[in-house]
Amino acid sequence: MKSLKVSLLVATPIITLPLFTISCIPNNESKSYQDLNAKANQAAILLKQKQINSNKLEELIDSILPEGTELEILDLWVDRENKEINVKFRLRYKDRRYPYSSDVKIIKLKYESILENLKPQEKPKEKPGRKSKEKNPKTQNDEKSKDGLNKKSNGKQKMKWGHWNVLKLSDKNDKKIAAIAALIKKIDYDVVGLTEVFSEEAVKEVVAQLNKLAGSGTYSYVASKKLKGSYAGNLQAEHVGVIYNSQKIKTIPFEKTKNNKKEIGYSYIEKFNSEFIKKHNKAEYVRPPYGVKFQWLKGKKEDFTFVFDHFDSPGGSKGEGTTSGVGNQELAEARQLANVLDHFDEIDGENEDIFFSGDTNIKAGKEKFAFGEELFKKYQSAFKDNLEFATSLGIKAGNYSQPYDKMFTKTKFKTSNHGIYKLWDLSKDDEFTNLFKELHNGKIETSEIRKLVSDHAPIYSEVEFE
Picture 1 (cartoon, rainbow, N blue to C red):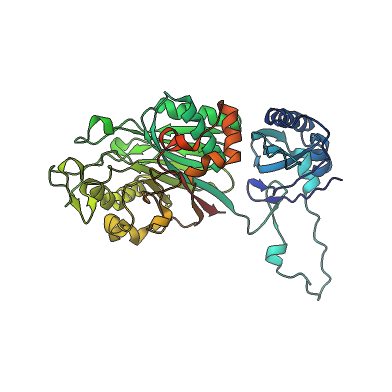
Picture 2: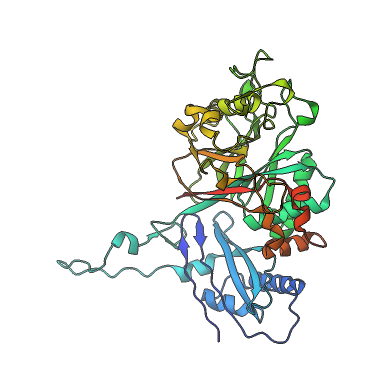
């Protein structure tokens, strides 16, 4: 027996379609990951051929569902300019003995006819002198969007963002690149900053692998130049790579950078005074913070600025000294961060939403001292400053040592679902393993996680807005 639940919640211009499933009793057919992907391709072709001209959406979906599978709609949004609905979905077997999910498919469908069928009926006119019996009319009566679809007054959108130190990422190791792409896809970032990147080509390769999983053109990237401070060693120079879902957001230029240039992406290379740096006249970041301004493409076009960085290595190396147990170089960088973020706030125009994340190398219990009160007057930390939120991987499998990776935000929007992906559990993650197998033969063993993939866990958070 087949069952279906479908509801459409439309904000401008997004449609949200909660998970629905249609299930069929499977035949004695091959239950392989490759077979499931073939079925997903078949479903995509059939759905596209239908062009959403059925009178009922459920009949349309029912007609293209391969036998023995469930269909999961992950996202669905309107492109008004081209009069299309973009559908993001994947298939899985109903039989839970075969825990596969297909790779994600994204297709474009014409929506003119379905809009007519989904228009809400007009509310009957009330007789004079009678009050409506409706309760909470503001929540029960949805506003109409310009598409003729219902727009819930409490409809929200969410953007997932985060950071990951990817441990000497270069274009020399295909297995590492496949693992990074598969985990970014599994976490489902909309924006993620990658630090400790040694080659921009490697970021390009990660994006290419991501697009194999998600569909061509889903992800894109920008990257900083390979930079370092003037007194940093040559081996300390790194890129920052910022990968983003280009179907949801786009890069836009900063407005007031040096020489009045409008730039996509900007590195903070300023020198500054610091009481903690004695060997040099001015302090600098060993690896300059890199920021990118984005605009959300769905609904109201909100702007956001994200800044990422990899601070100096922990401790007082090369005679730089320490203060209260914190290396003076990373301490100077941490204390300057409030000014750095203020600088990005100045060059990004009217935008008020600033997000920072990075590998700060500031140990547990030292956050308030290192970053100083000026930062916390304006910015909120996503994580508590204790070992419960450790992100750097210990030598022993399963252990985490320090909460080096941090997130600070200044925004008018609600932030939620702050998290740390427990990287030591990577080889036990079936969804990751299936994604990885799409890109590379074999699997990731626990013994190679720390040296091959990374010695830091990815972190993430969500921003909720209209």
